[in-house]
Length: 199
Image (tube, rainbow, N blue to C red):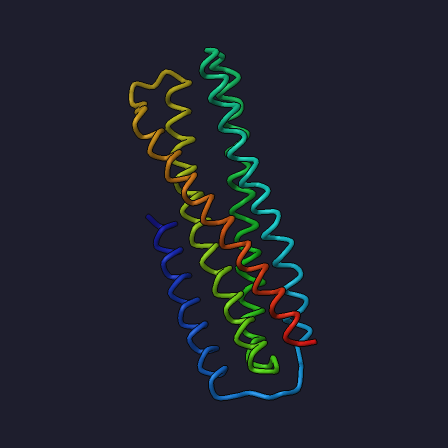
């Protein structure tokens, strides 16, 4: 519950921050091109972090296939080891998501100084998209944690294991994974448009 609450507060904070930047976009404009170094540096670092997150996501999906194969072959001990290892990947993804949120905050705070106004608008759109990626990533991690707990119960012989919960978690995770990849591609495309607008 605390994780969901903190995520909700963070999302609301981002919405307010984006709204404030949007107001500045409306009131300030210039034809001269200018991009603050703080935005450029945070943009490069956020792109790397987003790539690493998507890579971790792909690895997690592949791990599920391996776990499923070990399960079918009744190698429960091996499957449980994979589940434990994947728990560490979830923690790593959460840490990178926090780092990405920090970089996006720096980008958002720098947007008001970007010129021209078209570039400013594109930068705002890009940051907004990547913020929504964090929301989907948070959902993915929550579903994944639920899945790992359920699989641990199965492989350890716990009677509370629920196969339906596993299927539901995997379905939701795949849905979130698709959204994350789509949003990250849109983020990168907006940044390419941004680069063209400041040349």
